[in-house]
Amino acid sequence: MSLNHYYINPIDPKGHLFEVTLRIEKPHPDGQELWLPNWIPGSYLIRDFSKHIIGVYAEHDGRAIKLDQISKNRWRLEPCDHAVQVSYQVYAFDLSVRSAYLDELQGFFNNTSLCLAVAGQEQNPCRLILEPSDSVAHWRVATGMPRVSGNAHSWGEFEAENYDKLIDYPFLLGELTIEEFIAHGIKHSLVLSGRHKADTSRITADLARICEYQLKMFGDPAPFKHYTFLTMVVGDGFGGLEHNNSTALVCSRKDLIKPGQTKVDDNYETFLSLCCHEYFHSWNIKTLKPKAFIPYPLEQETYTEQLWFYEGMTSYFDDYLLHRAGIISADRYLRLLGNTLARVERGVGQHQQSVTESSFLAWTKFYQQNENAPNSIVSYYAKGALIALCLDLTIRLQSDHQLDLQQIMHDFWHRYGKTGEGTEDHTFFEYLSHYTALDVNEMLHNALYSREQLPVSELLENFGVKVARHVPANDLQSNGKLPERSAKVTLGARYKNHPQGLELTQVYHDESAYEAGLSANDRLIAIDHLQVTSDNINEILDAFKPGDSVTVHAFRRDELRTLKLTWQAPKKTSYVLSITQPEYLNDWLKTNL
Image (cartoon, rainbow, N blue to C red; front, side):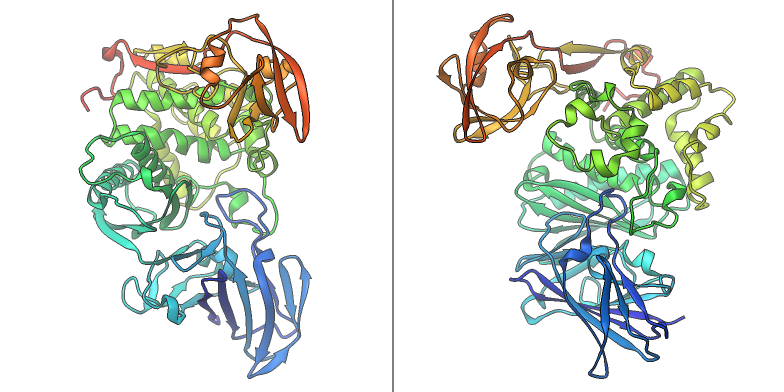
């Protein structure tokens, strides 16, 4: 089995260009085809990475070899019986976890963006040789890919078992901050690129607690021998993507705790929850995964109803395990749970789409959301997390608190994840029936396939937790916090500041703005003949009561519209959860943190 070589050089940071040369030792004698993935595992959208490839050519010993492009992401070499080199450049200017980025400060890439697959040789081992141009030779390198040559965190050679493995090892390059820590006997690394003033000792200590808990939760063997958190620090950003033995993250500087800061605030909590989420994916989607993803058909969309499980279940545990690991209190966890409730309940989308439909249509609806999303779709992340909560609480009740969702996830992973068998839509249902103390299939089926409201409040009452609904301070503050004030009327729209007033970003069906004829992207400039801005919107709303009518002025594109708006009473869209009977918690939550 021949070894294919990929030579990668960040040749032009100013122009955001990587240079890639692929050496194929044994091309197919009848004409070798090459292809590039159209999507990356974990991000369910056709992204057409091949559109960023520039100037593909092939040669052998200095002689040009004919290379034809036969589709948007496929090329074919003319028949030849000797080694061939295929060279090209890749434009890399997407500062996200899904693609590739390069400038004078840092570089990042997924190999789904850079490395052409050799058709028919996808199972061959792949050698990646990372070569620096002079301007970036001082950079350090971080990746989870096994190293063949070079010192740790230096340029050198790396090798993956096959193409599927190759594309599961992202690389982060730059003047990196690298901190290592041990969790459950396994080496982990926190890698930061970008300017920051983070307390890396505190962060790695908290990450160690999160990792330790998950490693013990799932038990041996761990699905990796070492693990790396590859983190791009920016002014304002958020995102994560799971990989074989690493995760790629984007976070805001404010989300990293600073030296001297002791308490976990909302921002740091956001970062830790993101890390917890992506780490949990090491089991729940990287090794335990839908059969439809074995292997990943990376040239076309692949549909599954199961994303509620793989993302929703993970979204339940990402916050919950922060509490179980002793990082946040029960009260802080319940506030996060209130945020999730508010996300699901604020719009009418959950009544238009089931969570399995949301999973199935991730490619076109969830990953291509527009301004009407709250009225038409439900998040399989958020509602999936609430389904997992309901399942966990029901399991605990039915088993007299002898069984919980953590144990079931442990057992389920060892049955279908460690073995690599994968799951179908019905697999989890059938597996739950093996637990004789449980009768949850009807509840779970309704939660997944109907558009009915979940029994969250009723189940939480059995654990001494009360759900109280409150009117938020304004249309932007539906969450899990007790509002300092309550709005008197509601606009029924989300908005952002604009030089001319307020730009509406989303308009909720059947509420005040909708009934007045306002739409997303309209620029609201006056209410009751007074200029409106983000600074005075609350003051203006406080002057009215439900049923009052006012004149509003707004621009739609470049046309001024004069409309009549009748104020509606605000809805109770903030969900505040509190422990009223701690003796009923039965180890679901700890009150002594």
